[in-house]
Image (cartoon, rainbow, N blue to C red):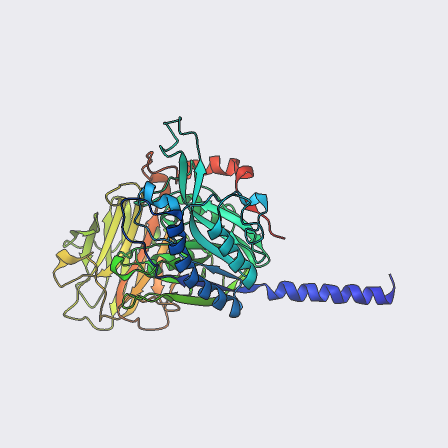
Length: 518
């Protein structure tokens, strides 16, 4: 090799190295969209009218996509139901649907919009990605023909209808398609036969996708992170906030911490239905979030994110969630233990009756331990420590294990567990732990007026959720939210979102839509 060619090789290597280093982080964007909804109707509108409404919503998304690109974002996530809303029957949703092909067809709708029939929405989304050189995730409806003579599986209209996420790359190419598996009150859509494990690779990390209610189940959510080792989850949702444990920003930030993965959340904005709460969440802390129940405005969020969080010095250590709680001698169980409800779930509670103390409350195999000290006990407020271990809610499908310290709605302890949005009480110390039988636990801290508390708490390796950096802001809840997937109740309507199907899913990975982008 001559000196000249050697120097050229070194220079090229240096440029490549600098390029790779530049992609150690990337700018992400999520957009919370106030959807323009269709007029209520019992009969389907024309395809032209359906497209007219969708284009009105895409007009708004276009502004957000252009703004994201101008800010240097590599990718933007838009919400579930963002193009047409949610109040449909199977018949009335049909004019809004398009046939979305398998991404392995290597299709750029912007360049060839008629290749797979009438696909104006896909063409426009593809062009937005291409013209702005940004990855775009959008949620639209997919239709797939089936044999209507097969009444056992095929719907009467001869089509399967899916709640679908699509991703277009910077060239406008369709690179990912995901059909939502865990439907929640969505009679207009079908669930696929099994959860799809959809990933795609970029120069700024490996991405996985699922939608809204999917996050509460093992598959596809946990499998994407634990087995397919994605760096970042893209998560469009139409999430209705439910206090005290399941507000969007509260649970989604906790899930990112518990699973130790980036989570990009775009929620629909609809105040009357309690829909708000979007964010960009890192494994160690929220990066940015938005919660607004006062206005009807959308909001775009930006943040720099680690492309490969497992390689980051901030990547949190693995946690043994029951280590501390199973090795200490339980604190005295109070005689004043009482029953209360969070939604339909019967918790065992005990009151924090003193300014400081050590408490234990148990239910079945779960014991929750709390050490605390209040800055000052407010006479107008009551807090309680609660434990729940069992199948959740009316559907009785998902097995929860929850330890929570929360503010009661009034000084009457029978209101403990009811929704409350404001608090005055600050804590100098709190340390919450539990004898969890699951490794999947999500740490939540929610402040007065529905705010998060980044940098003010941490999870220790022995499973304790503790405050740090001094006195807390007024607290609504401090919770450890556990999901014991192996004890979920399995039913036909519930599908196979559980641990028992993981081996089956992994064994069929060759058939999963996993796309490599060079």
